[in-house]
Image (cartoon, rainbow, N blue to C red; front, side):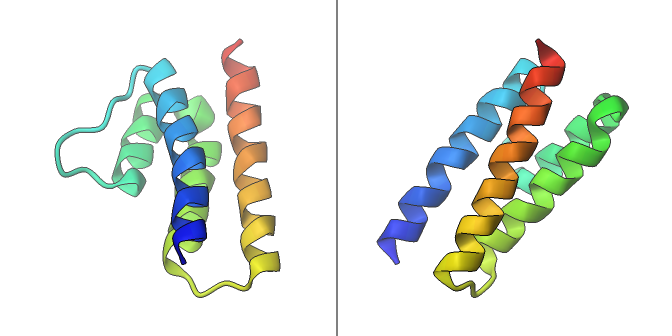
Length: 89
């Protein structure tokens, strides 16, 4: 269980840094999904990727997943972050 918690933190931290590059910092008490929604409103050109990133985060953190499915979702999350990152360059 601890392994999944630590695995989930690194992508979250990377995603938060990416959102900060977009100029969107978390507000006190704001969930990651709410943060992504706010970022999507501020940056509609990236809305589809931001909403997908929030949805994947919800699944990774809260759904009962086998290891294979968790790895697949984490891979998808990395791909979304990579696409967002490259669109900012």
